[in-house]
Amino acid sequence: MFPERIETERLHLERISHDTVDVFVLHEFYSNGDETAEMFEYWDSDPHDTVKETYDYMDEAEQLWNDGEATKYVIRPKEGEDGAGAIAGTTGLYPDWEKRSASLGIILDKRFWGRGYSGERADAILSVAFDRLGLELVVAAHVDGNEKSRRAIERYVEWYDGQYEGLLRNWHPQADTVADVHRYTISQEEYFEASNR
Image 1 (tube, rainbow, N blue to C red):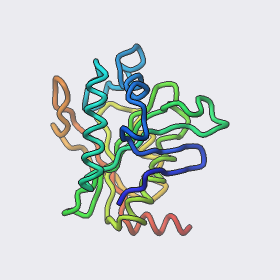
Image 2: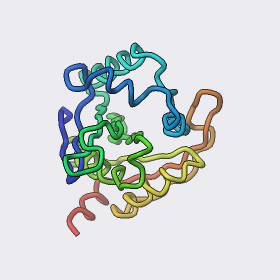
Image 3: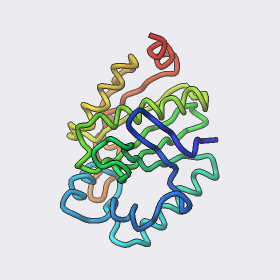
Image 4: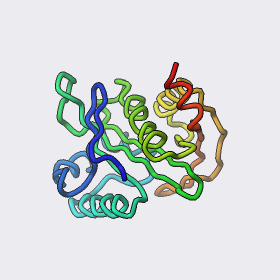
């Protein structure tokens, strides 16, 4: 149902599975380090302490894929980009089939921040949601205070004439708190109209 690979102008997105991604390489991305702590500051999970945690994460990604519940990808810059071939981040699409909608997610390695990769992968994932799966709404959200995510989301939501829905208080459970979340949406109609400009 979901594409195994997605190509954009500067990025390769590849399904997370034991057949496509080396667990040790993915663990290096998700494990503790000076920059990892900053990457995970607003994320809904902690860095992985062991390779087993990463292995289990890959098992979960495969199960979600097989059940048609979600798809998760590693993001790698293409040849010609600084850091080509390295894991720059991971992203996902999480459909809620009953609501005919889906949520986006992304985490990027700090060295790849500021390159516009979030918007570029959003374009590709929106195409999957609307063109391939026929969903009616895509949700993007960020934890209150995450200004980098806010700017990235606002750029592509504005491009597609989507809208800011508001602040959802005590919405996102984290390790030691429940965070407020800002929600944005893009409808299928808005997506197609903007794509045809």
